[in-house]
Length: 451
Image 1 (cartoon, helix red, strand yellow):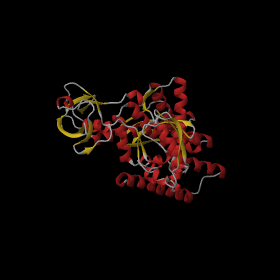
Image 2 (image 1 turned 135 degrees about the vertical axis):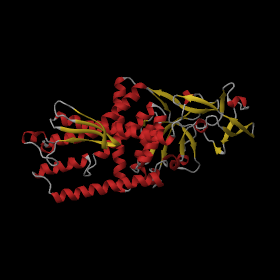
Image 3 (image 1 turned 120 degrees about the vertical axis):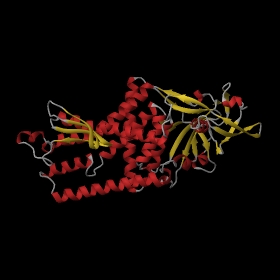
Image 4 (image 1 turned 30 degrees about the horizontal axis):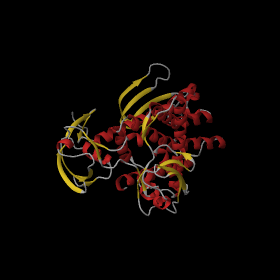
């Protein structure tokens, strides 16, 4: 079976993310607009020339489109600012709605993005997710973590008094402290030394620590990963037939240094049927083997297969995070709220220069992570969708003209003023909006290309 090129797979995953989340967003506008009696002229998934369209024969005779450019979508309401409206339909035009109706319709798009995130998290929590315990791996000498007394295989119990049972919670809590320029405390336990409290001071490193990929290296510790020690070997596998033994420590594959067992899996999976050079340590002797990998089908993909497993008991480091209905519902709302608040804080701090703007991702980065999450399975893809959905909802509520938040501000001002804004003022605000979006997109593309 043919293997999909990674670039094509990333692109398809990106289009799936955009298609799903934009449709959810626009459906929010559409549904609430219909509830308030506003006439819907067109609902389009995608921009540009329609490749499929259907016009309903009843009611508003709305035209539904699937358009050729799958990078967005829109809902077109009846609006006397754009087209001539028959006198009997004036009350059904968007711009003649009461302020509450306008704000509700505009807010509905972001609201549906937040609701989608809640549903995605609810599915994850109720279905159950294999989750890695927050156990410390490598600790760098002379780092913040080392100076505070953090050790290998310490398990984080809580951060600043809040229980932290997984790495997602740990990372979010630490980032929140870093963004707010606050030192933080970790309650940890270790099988050799029991429980203790660790206080970590970040000094003046908050901006550097907020750069993508710099949090762990800046603090000086990494999440635990299984060491590259062979724990088991499958009979008649390439590893078995070429003399690898339990207890061997893999040093490198094709001259690429190996620090964790997961790196062996990642390298091998990409080389079905290929020949690889393995360097390993056995009884203090460095040995080498040239091994031809097998090819194994995994769904639609074909992966390389070596036939080795790691030494540690997985139950010591992973657990199934599964909740009943009530608990999953509460956790999904809290997760969405917490992520939304953190996203807003990050965006505000980026504007003020307190957080690195390298956190703004462009389409290439989003496509890459969409592909990675999709290849990791439904749970990871849903988690990614929830995160992007929240980001989309938050960004659309920013008071920038052309976005939902900017239009909410505009209509609120017009309501207080008692008349529409002057054409000159509208032109200025639209120019400001275009410049703001252009700057945001420029930063995102710069980060994608040079970050």
